[in-house]
Amino acid sequence: MDKEAMQEAIKAQIKTVFDPEIPVDVWELGLIYGVEIDDNGAVKIIMTLTSPMCPVAGSMPMEVQEKVAAVDGVTDVDLSLVYDPMWTKERMSEEAKLELDMF
Picture 1 (spheres, helix red, strand yellow):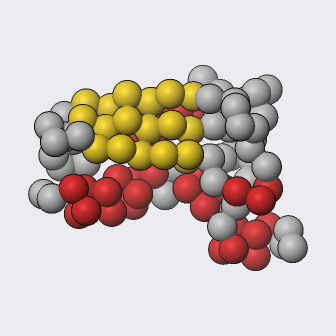
Picture 2: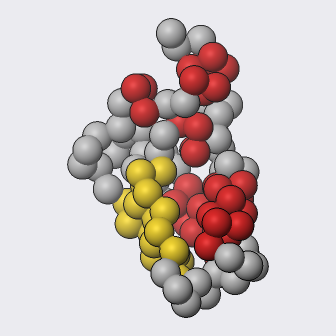
């Protein structure tokens, strides 16, 4: 699988992870700050949470990591959880803002 196809497959997997308190996936919420794939299939993900006190802080990043690891061609997943810059609703996609009526 080429990098572009792998990127799309990774995005599709990430979009299956939802914040249990918000009916929108973590991709559309803007919680994923970056996804990089090296030539060997190793993936580096930088993500955040809506709040450092998020009740799923222990489980949601692991769920993202596990789902990305299942993508064909992915050899390793390194997920970094960051809080700088802090997440704001401006990071949300238009789709998420519509879903949550946050315009």
